[in-house]
Image 1 (cartoon, rainbow, N blue to C red):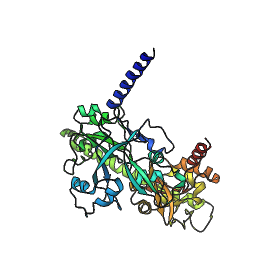
Image 2: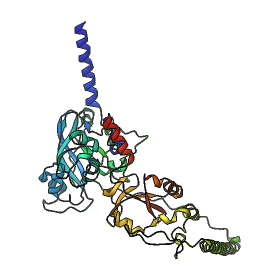
Image 3: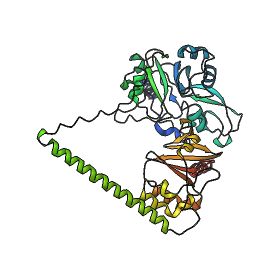
Image 4: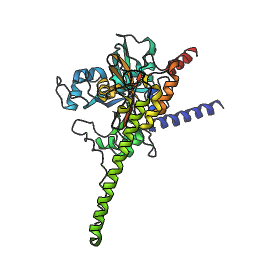
Amino acid sequence: MGLQSLLLLWILSLISSSCLIHAQQPYVRKATTDCGRADNSTSVLGYTCNGQNSTCQSYLIFRSIPPYNTVSSISGLLASDPIQLSEVNAVSANETIETNKEVIVPVNCSCSGEYYQVNASFVIQQDDNFLFIANNTYQGLSTCQALQNQNTLSTRNLFSGTRITVPIRCACPTKNQTDEGVNYLLSYLITPGDWVSRISTKFSVDTGSTLRANEISEDDPTIFPFTTLLIPLQNPPNSTTIVPSPPQATPSPPPPSPPPQSSGKKNKTWIYIVVGIISAVALLFFVIIVVFCVFFRRKNKPDQSKSTDPIIDSKSFESYEKTIGKQMEESEEFLESISGIAQSLKVYKFEELKLATESFSSKYWIKGSVYRGTINGSLAAIKKTNRDVAKEINILNKINHFNLIKLSGVCFNEGYWYLVFEYALNGSLADWIYYNRSTKK
C-alpha cells in the first residue's frame, strides 16, 4: 500500500512539472495598481519559473527619459551590461539618447525562488513610494507588489537614501515555445494607444504567438499602460529589426454624391440658396436670443460684488478671473447647475494645466484619466473627461464639508473638461482604510 502511494505521488509530480514546463505566462492586466494584492494569479509578483532553463538571455524595452537617457544610466538602472546595450542599439557609450526613444536592454534573466527576474539596485529618492518607483522610474518593468515582496520595508517606511532591490520582470521560453522556434522573450512596456497586433507587427511576430505567450484571449485582447507584454522572438533584437509602428488608419472619405439630373439643376440650385439663407437667418436669430438671455440673467442677479459674479481668483494656483457667462457659454445647462457654487470654483487656462503636467506626460499619470500636476508650487490632481460634469461638481460641492475631496477649479478645452482637485498627498481614504485593516490582521 505504501509503495502504491509513493508511485502515485511520483506520477502526480511528473504531471504537474510537465504542465508547468508547457504553460505560458498570464498577462498582469490592471492588477499592478492594487499594491495590497499579494497573490500571483495574474503575475503581479513576477513571471513564474516554468521554462526549460532556470536562466537565459532576455531583453527589455525601456524608453529614454532624463536622467536615464545614456547608456551608462540605463544600464545602471536595469542591471544590464553597458557594452552589450551600446552594441544592440548602435549608439556610442557617451551618446545622449533622444527622449522617448525605445531602447533595447539585454539582461540575464534567472529564477529567484518561484519567479524569473533581474535584480537591480536602486536608491530611494525623496517622496518615493513603491508604486511611483515601479510605474514611473522603472516604467512598469516592476510592480509595487513585487517590490514589497522583495524588500522588508513597508510603504510608509521608505526613507531617502535607502537602497532596495528592484525585481525586474523577465522570462525564459517554455518547452512549447522552444518547439515553435522561440529562443528569446522580450518584456515590452505598453503605452496608451498600444494594442497586441500593433506591437507584434513592430517585431515581425505573429499576433497569435504573442497572445498565447501572455495567455490573452482573442475575444478580449485588451492591454493596459504600465504593464509588460512578453514578445516571443526567434533571433536577438537590435535597432534595425524593430519595424516602426504603422500610422493609425484614417477613415476613408464618403463616396461622392451622384450628380443631379440636368433637367432640374437650376431649380435645385435656387432651393439650396433659399434654404441656406433661411438657415443662416434662423441661426443668427437663435444666437441673439441666447446672448440676450444670458445678459438679462446676469443683469437681474443680486449684486454680490462689483464684478458680474466672477469665479474667485486663486492666489496659490494663480488662476485668472473670468465671468461664468463667458467661460461656460458652451453649456447653458452647466451654467444652471453650478450657479449656486460659482463663488468656490476657479477657471484655469489650458496652458496652465499643460505646464503643470508637462503636456500631460506619462510620468505624471496616476491612473485612468487622472494626472498629477504642480501649479505654482502646489500639488494638484487633474482629471480629464468629456462627460457632463455638472452632476459631479454638484456632488463634490455637497460632500466638500466632510473634507473627503476638494474641487479647486475647472478648465474647458476642445470638447474636454479638466477638473482640478487638491492632491491627496498622504493617499486616498480607501488606501488608509485598507492599510489600517491589513495591519490589524
